[in-house]
Image 1 (tube, rainbow, N blue to C red):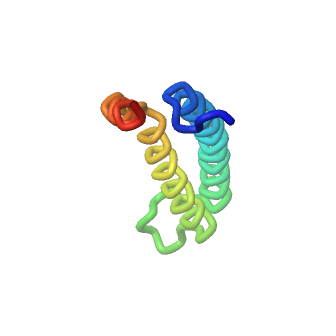
Image 2 (cartoon, rainbow, N blue to C red):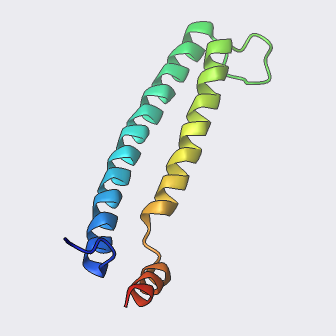
Amino acid sequence: MANSYLPETLRGTAAVSGLKIATLIGSLSRSVALLTVDIEHEEARAGVRDLSDPAYPVLARSLRVRRENIGATIAMLENLRTPKASALDTTEREVA
């Protein structure tokens, strides 16, 4: 039975996780782009682009919040994706 705590296994798991995170970031980035288009379309339809205007569309306002939340999620995932060399070294030392 293979030892799942070997450094090679940890690196392989990290590589697969990194790929999954990169795929998720790509998908979320496309969602942000679509939301931006939808916001622009709604603003053009309503003829109001100023957020402080009471006539600003509710749909555009909610889409903006959603886009900001997805942007925050992307930023968090990008932080996870960047390998922390010291954390990997510590894990390898613990295994040895």
